[in-house]
Length: 282
Image (cartoon, rainbow, N blue to C red; front, side, top):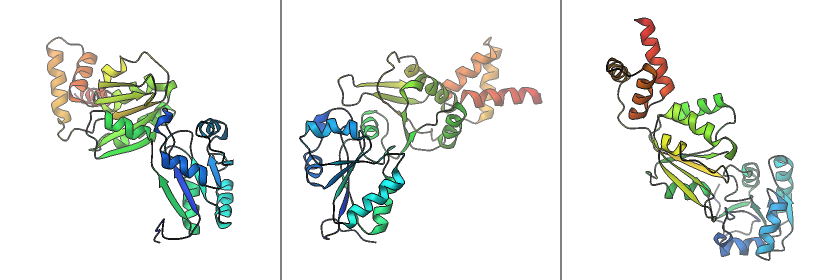
């Protein structure tokens, strides 16, 4: 299946990126597309109405969101069959990136019509390039699950990846989530970004434990960029021996485990379990 976007006369679904905060980042091409298509499919027509009004875009809108993806996708394909061009937008950033859009893109491609990206803002890419961490390879993993055990499971699946990790964080659970990250991933270098491109834009860079202790504003959307797993890791036996040495020097076991985990950038919980399993065998 070959799509030559500008060499055929097929109707087109445009995936249009919209600003993530600063309206000046709306591209001229995005404005032109939204003005010239026949319909705009919006994640939230009320929110998008403000964007369209700002740029004097009078194109009619239809709703396309998580709760009507299947039926709305069928309708959009029908509009394309009738020769209409349609633009898909989300509330901010790129459609499909932790936002609705996959279903309709898949159905439009399957039906033989064009799917064309109109580039623009992306919160996770902005955070990644400004993080100060190695940019590639990287893995963007969207939002973490809501429940604690779900977060732990997700992080355990990726903790050994030799690539930078990027997540979106819910503003209501930032402190709790960072604590879980520290326990599972260890004290890695991170960059926590919020309000990107807006007046209160902020980047907090440093070891995860320090970043956890630096948060005093619980507002805005967060992106966290996490350094990759170390290429060289100390063996568990060496870590346990180090804990024993610290204890012999007078440090309490819990403190020795926390200190070793932080210094070696390993999971404190795993090290705690390994230490006590060793003691049980002894």
